[in-house]
Length: 85
Image (cartoon, rainbow, N blue to C red; front, side, top):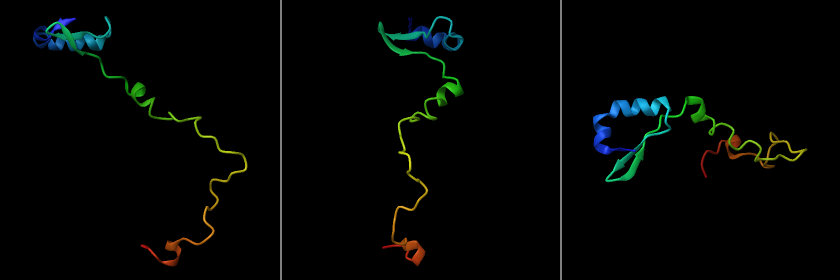
């Protein structure tokens, strides 16, 4: 843990230390209490991993259901030229 004053004096060195990931993430103390933790940003692949496919396997489609089949029996308004109701 380093103080905020030391962090300001050695900011670049602290960022290099956080980027190198040697000793974990350095924490910044203000008045003896941890106020922040310096951490390098995640790699691009690590950052996007939770976004793509996070719901995979959570939706089950019963067999025999055609998702491309029409859901309405009556024609759509747009087919008749009606744009607003």
